[in-house]
Image (cartoon, rainbow, N blue to C red):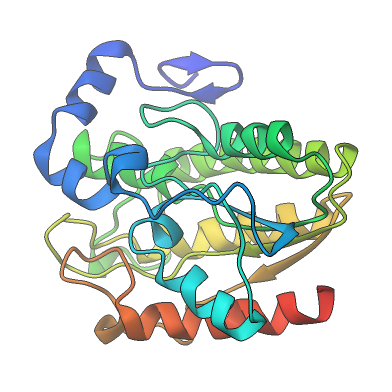
Length: 254
């Protein structure tokens, strides 16, 4: 049995959450929630499309800006830096973002999102990797079972959220996966195998969802030069590459 089990998935106790909140490096990288996020857009030129997710989208807002330019108008945005799929220290979570979007306008049909990265990243960089998700070069192909089990639990939350979106009237989801991090200010290196396994799991959740879900895998196009010095977030070049990948899936749905 895994420690700190709550509602089917390992959660951090209050003392650990306090550590996350007071870790200065984490606050810089994952953001101070909405204060470190691109502005929320509750009413857009195209209200049918809603963006949900974490700081890959929210920290700079450059991916959305590029997509707005391609579309010739804005989409709604609820992304929040530091957000996990459910719960967590930073609010609103991705599920909470969806609930907010629904309360503002329950008639949106297309969701563009990411989620699950902070669920792994926060404990790994702030709590000395309690699920053993980091692997060294000599451990190729040997991601720990504890990390796999933890990511498998994230699968359940993502699958539940996608199915709840379908029940709420969402017809299409474009789900952005994660690229491999690099050595940087956040000490988020050595996570290649966790990212690979995580993308596999997120892609499976997307494929098995009731809603029409298309998974976007950025690993083949994002290089170290496309990642900021923190080792996690995309540069302008990285954001542009990601926006191109998303647009290929989003444009036919508009």
